[in-house]
Every structure is written in C-alpha cells, then in structure tokens.
Length: 127
Image (cartoon, rainbow, N blue to C red; front, top):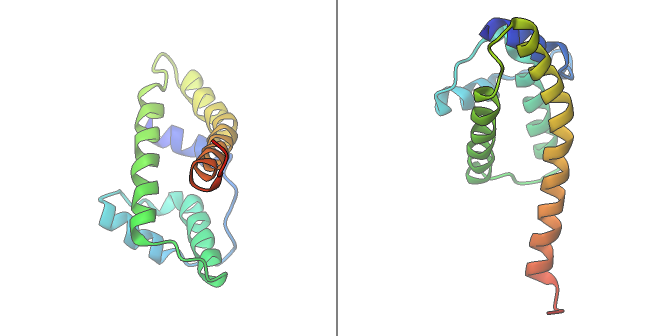
C-alpha cells in the first residue's frame, strides 16, 4: 500500500528543476529521522529548489522556523494518512490523489488568512 500511494503522490507532483541537487534535503531528512527513498526525489528536489530560491533571494529561513514548519506538516500528514481508506487500493489512491490536489490550496489559503490575522494583531492600531 505504501508503494502504491507513493506512485500516486509522485504522479501528481510538480517536478523540481532538472539536475537539482537535493543532498541538503536528504541531510535534513536524516536529522529528522525520516526515511530517504531515492525513488521519491521529486518532492526532495522541489524542497531543495525552494530552499535555494530563499537563499538566493537573501531571505533567511532559520533552522528553528524550518523545524516549526516540519513539525506542523508532520502533524497534518499523520492525520491525512490515518484517514486513507483501506477497503481497496482504488479508494486509497483516489483519496491520496484528490486529497493532495484539493487540500494543498486549502493549506495555502489558510496560511495566508492566518498571516493576515497575525499582521492585524501585530500592526493594526485600530481596536
């Protein structure tokens, strides 16, 4: 089931830049105690590309901030994987594929809304 769901997730992933080194991501994964499966490197390359873009722009993403993101994403992933149907491979693949495509925009929108609320709390002088 794990391999089947990996194939489904890989099929809908955006590929990273060709030839993009993702050794840094593998080092992070090893530090976090995550398994490193080189057949799943599309996501690894995408993260490497994003981290390199931050660095190139001079945007400091501290190790503490990255760890915070990792911890929250791990909680979300645990909840999602716990809800994968087990009645058939087809329903599991459907859940993973649709859940990935349809939930990612929800996560991004919630993040932006939370940023707006945090900004209002910090900077808005109106009661």
